[in-house]
Image 1 (cartoon, rainbow, N blue to C red):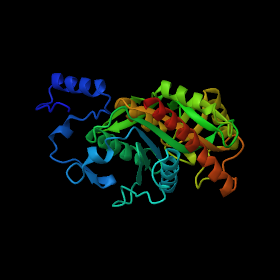
Image 2: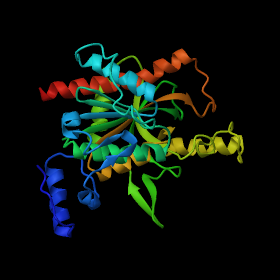
Image 3: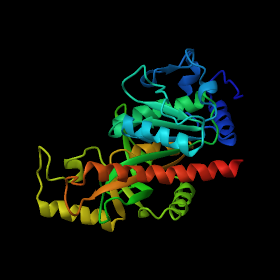
Amino acid sequence: MAPILADNSSSNLAERDNYYVNNGFGYVKNPHLDLLSEDILYHFDLGTRTHDLPSMFGDVKFVCVGGSPNRMRDFAIFIHQELGLDGDGSDIADICAGTDRYSMYKAGPVLSISHGMGVPSISIMLHELIKLLHHAKCRDVTIIRIGTSGGIGIEPGTVVITDIAVDAFFRPQFEQVILDKVVIRNTQLDQTLAESLVRCSKEIDDFPTLIGHTMCTYDFYEGQGRLDGALCSFSKEEKCEYLQKAYIAGVRNIEMESSVFAAMCHLCGLKAAVVCVTLLDRLQGDQITHSHCVLTEFQKRPQKLISNFIRQQLQMCT
């Protein structure tokens, strides 16, 4: 049981830091939370008074997040079956059914949560998820973003395991505006986890997998250099030059969540990875032209890899 600190002096905060780090907890870096009589996780429709969070979530070891509610429900059913849990998982319930912001499903030690699209949406979800793990007293949690992305210079359907999340200038950083200041945060991901995922991918022959930089943008159209948006102020040549620069800088895919995901998980001491499948090669075009059937198969590829990884990790713990 964590010590309850009566004040927020630097010595007490350091003591609490050490407690959480040494005991494998995801740590929330907010001393103001200690002053709350109740913490309402509004966008999850959960709270520390209304729900027994340790009982509900205390056994969670893996959290998998992705943009689409339907995709994360499908993943929860899939991992339920892969782990050999009772039943087929088809009746799995949305824990966040009381809200229309996010969906959350639990399959044994695995949480599957939707985060919507873009930095603001995933940021809100992560704040409440990290607090949830804290209140539930979860230990040694691994968080993995499973998503889709646009590739750069690689075959559509390739699964990219992110080594570094970079911004639109190819810098490994995330800029957060806090009050009237711009705060720059590190986007370091857990390299040991990434390497483990790469090794795990070598056991799957169904699709190509590689490790590379992932560029995170704030916009799907202009921010990613697309020529097919409602607005466009650059030429095809300028777009191609920019994407070539990205490729030379080590970027292999583009999406809209990895930088804040990496920054927040790094700050809170949580092991994190980003695993995305590419739906197209942006050097060849801007629009996704594959059939729905093909895209559905593509989207299952990261799920297969993560399922294999989770099963291996759980076997190692037994």
